[in-house]
Amino acid sequence: MALTPDEIAQIRDKLFEQRRQGHKKLDFLDDSIMQNQDPAARDGVYYSQHPAEMGTDANEREKFYRIATSEHRFLYRIAEALRRIEAGSYGVCQSCEAEIPFARLMIVPTARTCVDCQEEQERVRFQGW
Ligand SMILES: [Zn+2]
Image (tube, rainbow, N blue to C red; front, side):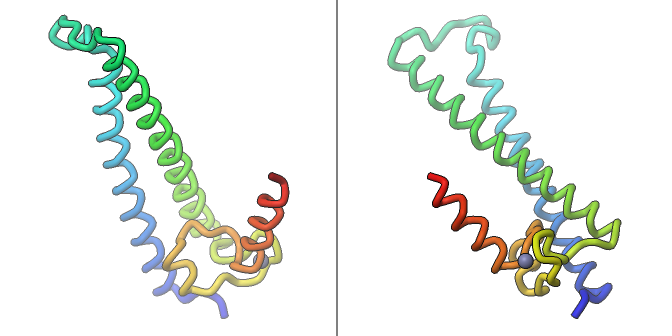
């Protein structure tokens, strides 16, 4: 059964909400990265010259970048999902073209495949390792 306009509206709301959260998280990460990145630039004072502390800064920074990267990827998937809604191709598995159940889409609104195809993809990926 295809998605009703009401179901689409609910999913769109969810995507908007997730996008808002994602941007908020990225703003926070940006601030954190900026603050961490160049201590000298802030207040013109080097306060992190101890090697151990510098190591911590580098680790922290890397962690922030990693989270930011995955957050960007997530926002991209949200944008893609919204585009698919506009195009009317949303909710169809891109692998087997089955309709993805509304219940799954409400949990994973960015889903591009049905559960079966996703499990298949994950199985292949794990075997690749
Ligand atoms: Zn499928």
